[in-house]
Image (cartoon, rainbow, N blue to C red; front, side):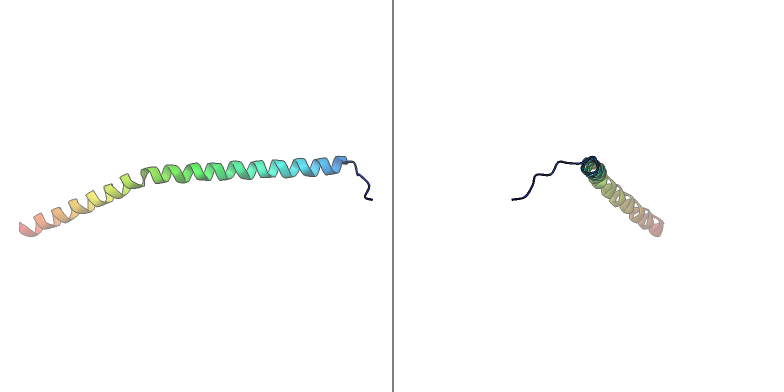
Length: 67
């Protein structure tokens, strides 16, 4: 029969270190997710702006060509 082993201070410190590491990684992933979501929120506005600027450039080129 296996004997029950009590946790030593080193074991507790390793467990606490692992928990702290996992919490830090979780916080980092959460921050990256928030950043990506913010970028996705403004992407359609940026794309529409690029389309409008391109259309204005084409219109200006046509006007210059006609004059």
